View 1 (cartoon, one colour):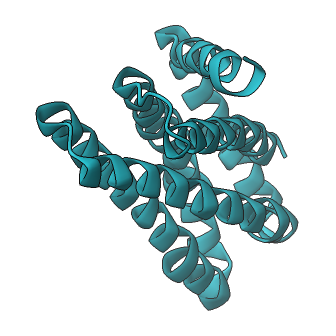
View 2 (tube, one colour):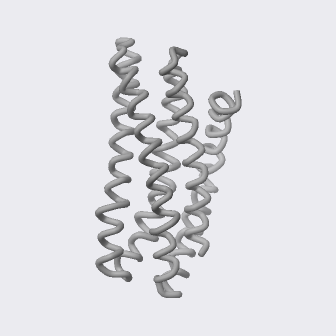
Length: 187
């Protein structure tokens, strides 16, 4: 199913960024310089690639069809599981941004700790979340949605992807990801 394949591919990129976030946090934890610009780029990636670009396809397309068509089990799985975790990830990003702002304003050790804690907490959350979606939620949807719904999900996903490609979303954020990987993973 094209719609699910795209989401799984994006999950790989999001996991790569989670690895970067953890590596950067570990460096800060070990006493190396905290480069706020890099953490702001990680925050931007999460908000605009992982959330706005990726989660929008999940929430507005796949999950909507699953909730409408697959009954209470799908509604509970999505509403009480996946969407709650999406919101928790957003909370970590709000807290990360506030900590970055506090750190820049006051060079606060508490803010530095909050940067590391929220970046790292997000990585744990998103890795577990992605595994559940890939192994359970997406499989359940792909196997149980009607052929008509799968076709609509695929078409709407394709349209969103094409629009994002025209805007340069994927290119922009994959370039940021590669640059941060060079610095924190490969460097």
